[in-house]
Image (cartoon, rainbow, N blue to C red; front, side, top):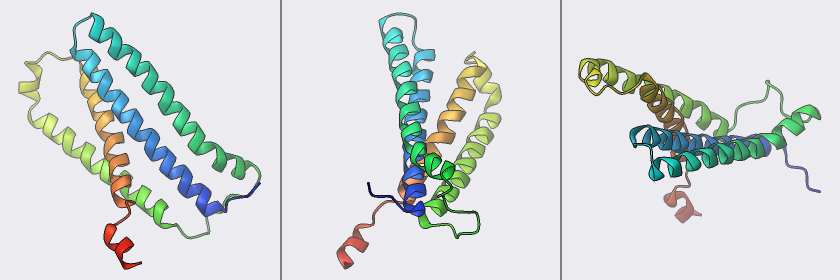
Length: 156
């Protein structure tokens, strides 16, 4: 069995975690849709989609983390003294971008708070939306930063 080096394992884990975050964000958007729809068939379908989304998110994240966790438990994972790779740097930038997007959304919500109160939506709706924005912005930022640039492929 071929043993991946530590950097490849960490890169693969971070890509998998980004996929998990994307699925999590989509799941939370479905939860918002579920909250906005009246009880009935569509609401029940959205509830089932939400349960499936939670299961798939957990499975994708576990599959992504397991190889790195296994290498760490075996004492084979890179130490803190080694330099960060491109993918690790992209993940850190993505978290910063997610923080910026979330803060911007909070600022917008606060500036329209008196009008939003007229909608009489439960506070859970806003927290769910903010969480969806946070994880979606991190994952989408990560995928954008780590995309393969067609110009680089043309040069090779």
